[in-house]
Image (spheres, rainbow, N blue to C red):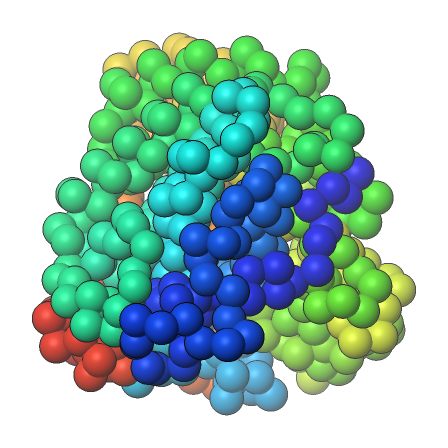
Length: 478
């Protein structure tokens, strides 16, 4: 079901970090005519529900391009010569503090955070059942945590904004919080969300964040902090909830499969010409074959690599579900087949959802945490649930080191194109060696290769933000 498919623009009273009590860039004490003050916008349960729908709507443009920061810098995907001008920086590590793509990502994250802060600041006195208030609060905390998790992985320490901003001077007064402080807040939000949210929904609420989603995301946060005992304990409590057996891999993706039993939390998209669809079709297929494959023009923005294709084991059922191949006669293109489909409507309004967390990921997170915590037997049990679905023989009798290698490989093939690879390489301290080996082996379709800079593990703080707020120190190397 598609249940959070509401039109964008429900929160017209917010822009970036500033609340609707402002009028453009002028901050005054009087309420301008035609502007609904925030205090009047959160008066009823209907207002809160509309605000929550606006929060979910704001995730769509974020995840329309989040792959560019989480897959393109890795050995999984690449741009092609015809698309270098739009996303080549992310593929070739040539981004700068002035990069428009990075500025847009930063602004969208903080826009969504500001929507969450507004709801959390104003929900208290609104009359409604406590269970509903808890649910709305927990969902806003979950989304805020997700946005800060994206920010801290991309930029390191960032301004930690947790309340409504009411003036330009206030907005420009924040320093960068330490990454550790950002993680503390993410953990707090997710713990509170997990305590408030139901484990599942029915009817029109299907697709909203649940306590299981909050715990799964918190488990991933722990992995990024190398808190393996905490991650193992937490994830051990939810892995029994995974469907047994896992649904076939091909049924986890694509039109008609949204909100299936594999999904823990996904970004909901809807076709129909309302600006609620996705652009995966144009992004993920080659220009030379876009119309043939999907019905809309391809962009060659996020093509797979032969290295990814070749890393699948013989007989792995996931390969041909995940990766499509188009031979143009001069070049073989690999594309993210799991996210594109034939018959995408005009205007490139794709209907299929984007999985943020699914059970294959959760099982592999548990496997990693258990193995790093010395419980390799339990790790292999979880790993083999994923391998069994892929039609592969179980990995048996591995020591901790070999199990680590097997789990890392499994994450790459199970989650390819889903926005995990780059961040996994960074947290494993593997990206320099992996990318250098990749560079030494393959010739890219653009004819140029990434500049492997071992010290660069974060994106730059956008220069536009530093201009507005000189308190924001730049990341090293920029």
